[in-house]
Image (cartoon, rainbow, N blue to C red):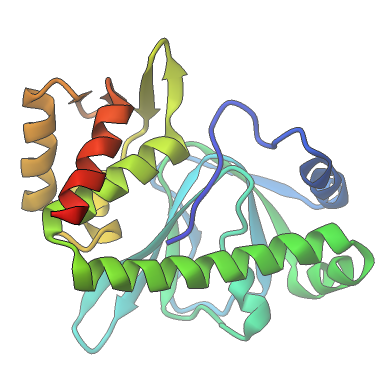
Length: 231
């Protein structure tokens, strides 16, 4: 699975991200509301999509099993579909905005030209592709070695680090994913996710409702994920 940045600002203030922002500034932006389709299934992808602000889930339909698969969660500073450059046409996948989202839409040929002109663009793309491959391998390892509960705990830690905003000593995640979507990201059923979340709420490690997830003790959550991993 892919990882992403935090919500407060679209870009980190290091040189590479500011250079990336400046390199993409001339391309058009498009805003999407929560629930809007950004990429549509059945359409060949001829553009690269870069998230300025927001949260996006990428899905793929498996026709053999007639099942929707969650491929990844993308947020501020992420390219949703940079693997198009490696020959993936993206015909069987689609992307949905899970919060109000703004993206840069960059024609593929223009993006290739940018990569040849700006080393930072090539670096970001290569890092993203490598990261996606590493995350896929890690996901397969988790599938093989971890129980369903372990996978959910590990994902909750990653999700909090990725999407959480500071709220005093706690972390809050707005526009939270559904239990079904969370399950898709860690290969667990909706019922299993609900069971684990309710257990964590009873222990006062988290609190949640339909609008937000509040992680009251991230260190304890990390400890639980690590402890259950080695059992």
